[in-house]
Image (cartoon, rainbow, N blue to C red; front, side, top):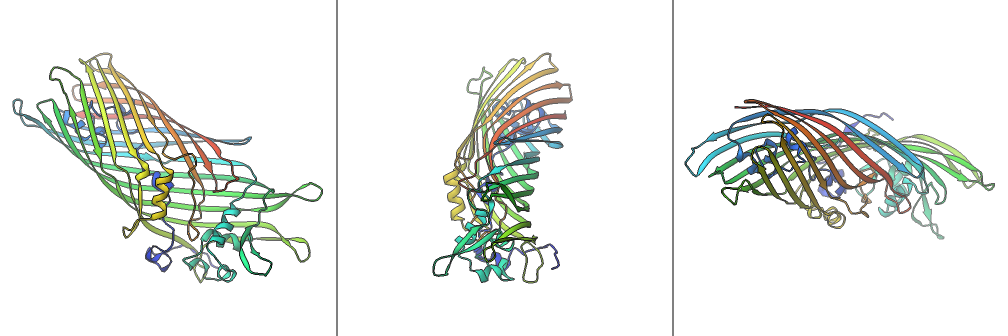
Length: 536
């Protein structure tokens, strides 16, 4: 059987009319929500708490009025390098992987147009900024001994779809819009078996794995890509006391995950000796690309004319994403299958993959939409002469209001309901300070805390007719960022350096199963960012 990868056309019969539940899950949507602490080194060094302080190009993506405090034009570029460390533990099994990477984080330009010194409108400023809003680069490795198996999920999906034996055995099984690809692959590789009642009627499917047997599972993956934001900003300075701004944001999404999940099966014979029944390896490729757009409006007010105290506020509309996800898989199996006729085990091995009627391998292609929640931002800022600047910021977005839609705009009812049931309102707190050692040199410190987006009992359930074969999911906990930095300001040239330590935990599951315990994962990321810029 010739194996050639070809892409399914997005309008293919398989996906026509939204009949197949192939679209993204809430885990795919949540990956796009919120943003990493990223931008200029000054912004990072102060924990992002600059919404009311302003005068930094990055603020156009949080509080668009922040650019209104500029009195001269600015152009800058930011870059850096980082290390992601992922440590996983399941029982006594501990794994740890590092990934080093370079990054191009931020580049922007702002033109400050002075209207007058004595007119109510003092400045009109125009700006553009590129920022890497989210970075997905990391490597993971996890393993453990389970008393549950992914083959149970294969059997459940095949059973719930109502698949008959003739449908699963058909050369056009993967073209059937009511059958799950994972269930078909499980049947083709002898990992699930038909179940009959006393009358010989097919009642469903059961896993090759039997509850109480032992499974050695190993999961490893590489994740790459990110979300890139392009901001177009306009801001106004009124009487040097009131600043208002607006930003149109455009986004580009590119995320890729290549994962491998292996299971080895063991059972106890009559003499209580553990014996191996073989195993399988499932390779998955998942990619999502797309674009989005949103609008942000904000203001900064100095309520007391003679005081440097500032109040800021901003509102962000939902980001409207249009996405296309691609997926492919192959399963290599080598198992000993029990033959009840002669009470012996027979070795079965081979490779299976989704294919068309002629045996050509298929890659799924599915367009869909995500509408993120509204976001609200409040901030306070205070400067002590030219010696210090203090910032405090709070942000809120109710992730449970996230909406997922088919490409024609019709709401995905189940996925949107999953968001309502499984996602939280997310609170972000930012605190930062800058201290001038001399008129030209400054030091900075900051802290940034983001509460957990996923509820503890959230899970990823693939529909019974899904073409998705990647069953893994993670419930991320709260994120903490600790930052510090240095800065130099000359008459025209400036340079900033920041260090960021990012830490969060997550509970990982290779598949959805009530008997599978969580893998505890700790992520520690260290990053250095440098910004070079000129003011003119």
